[in-house]
Length: 170
Image (cartoon, rainbow, N blue to C red; front, top):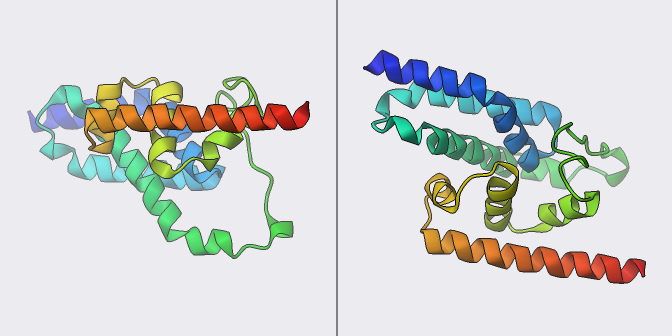
């Protein structure tokens, strides 16, 4: 049975590696860093997959690992990023399949990046990774009603921010 769980974990990772990369990239905003986050998440998942009791939970379990690794990476590298001179900053890389083609505009993406981490996580998991609210609740280890309130609050903030941008353009 243990080998079955390991094989299921490996199969899930292989089938969903692009989604995991896209999720990591949405947090760290750098190709190489996103690859590092995914690599760390895969290593952690393969080491700890033996503890999975419910095979149906592999998806949310692995998403939780990727999100946690991305947040850990951001916390660890926060000082380095904030002290970087503005003229040395690299232009953000837009990943195919997650860039302008998947979003109405670059403005939406920029507004999502301005959201607090909890709200950003809910928006990304809901609309870009197409997880249900219950799955988001499992991934973030929060109450379903909290996920709903974060989603609606985030949508209000996004709407307000986009209305301000459109007002400024007019």
